[in-house]
Amino acid sequence: MTYGAPPPGQPQQPPVPGPSDNPWAPPTQRSGPPDAVPNQQPQQPRQPAPQQPAAAPHIPAPRPPQTPTQPTPPGTTYGAPASPAQYGQPGQYGQPGQYGQPGQFGQPARFGMPQAPTPGFPPPGLPGQYPPGFPPPRATTSKRSIGLVALILAAVLLSGVSMILGFTLGGQGGKLAEGAIPAPAEGEAPSEAFIKEKSEVLLDESAEGLLDGDEDTWLSAYDSSIHDQMKKQYTSLKALQVSNFDYQIIGDPNGRDSEWTVKVGLNYCFGAKKGGKCAPTGMIFDTQWRWQDQELLATQVSESSTKPDESSQFSIGARPWEVEELKAEAGDRAVVAATDNASDDYDVKETLEIAEAAAENADKYAVYGKVDKYVIFLGDDADIAKWYGLGSGLPQQAIGFALPLPQIDKEGKPVPGGSEVVLFAERLKQIEKDFGKEGKEEFEATVRHELGHVATLHHSPPHTPKDQNADWWLSEGIAELIDHDPKEKIDDYPREKQAKEFLKSSSWDGELIAPEGNDPYGSAKYGVAFYWTYYLYDEYGKDKFMDFFERVARKGDDPEEAAKESFDKSYEDILKECKKYVKKEVL
Image (cartoon, rainbow, N blue to C red; front, side, top):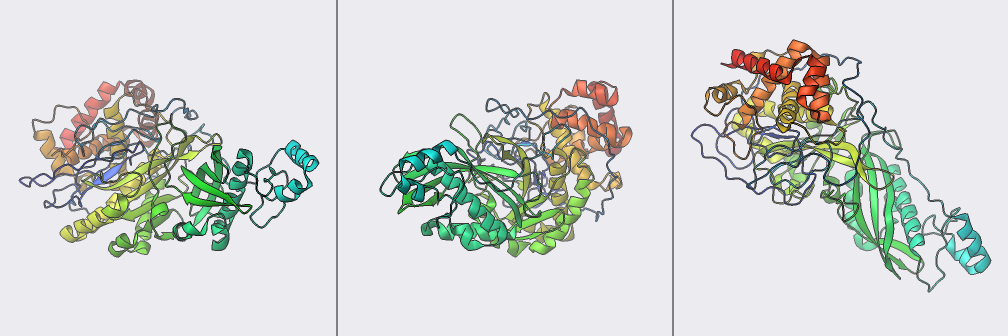
């Protein structure tokens, strides 16, 4: 996420209520460019942050064109292997941010898994790819349910009619499915077991139709009353080059006679080869089914909530492709999709070129595991309000954020998954109009920053940070570093002026705390985080810094213990060095 503040003398923008009920609110956000921008609507954010904070306006500052040339990541392992995620009781995924007034974000909550709802901002912590020791993603190929042989034999013995009518799970047309649960005889109510297996088989066949480009097969599981809805999803998913789409039924169906509710888990991937190995993103949603005239059809598909049961706090609203008909383009490393409104502001193909360059740059820092594909959605405020449960609580000063999302395991529980990046097209375009060339560079910087969050935090194991401040400045500092490129001249860093004002002010007490609300030094704090990160990266080398980052920002370790392991120094001494460096460079 990117952060900025209105220029001196300009009125502050009133806070906007934050997302009301979104445990997985987007993390890392970027708010308007560093230097102040004229007082405008909430359309000039830029703020880096992989936490659940609210981004402050990021106003474009003159940015020299950047052609990052990052060092090639060493083939070393950073820190101890991350242990497999433990998802016991809900709420163990990092301290939710403290959000007083709507639109304010306190200590960004860290993790790469769902956070409690956060007024104003997404949770920090983008999960990174599979770190050493983390289990690889389960296969996402379609399956066919296997029933109990005993039930089949019983059906054969009890009723010849049952045998003829009952073994037709392989589609509505009556194809015989080996080992299937018997269908009810005409006039009889279906069993719970039958509804569970039949619905999964139908969904699997529908998914195969989607992957094969067969819209009729995709629609075959759905009642004609929802065909328009499902056609829109089909169009968007094909545009996103969906490559894996794997359903599973979670728990037992609920219902009786002809009407049933079935909870469905789904793991999907974009931009890969059909059925290829990928680290999927998952979601959970409810479906309504009707058994009529010996046929089972879905009559309603609810928006995803990623809420496996009432005891869980996992919850997130609809994904963009569920509620929008998107235009999309996919490249080797990135997928870019935009709504109709957003595509008027940004050409999808041109944006993909920017994303591909940013992805190549971010890959150099993905030392904890490769990101399969960077997925970016562009929308206007009205569009984004329908995504991820944000509603009317859009962060006022954000222009982009990276959101950690789960995948669904075999037990139907969310575990670390992929990440999706969201850019506020309307706000970014306004910045370009106000600042010209520098505004366009700000757009490119925002993409680099957010993909930097994905590369470094993708698939982070769930944790509660021992030190929220350390977690924040490391996460934002590395994203700023990835944007700026450690080989670029430090004098060219666009937040230098703001950082200087902050360090000279009475507000600077030596402690670097995440910005809150309309913090006038919000952008400056991101700048200080950059200088601290730049110093450690340059002074101790990439290997040691990335080892320290893994321990503190990805795993939530105590920075004091991590500093001793990574730098053979106390954290207090490390901070003293950082403070000395930033004063030398900025003041």
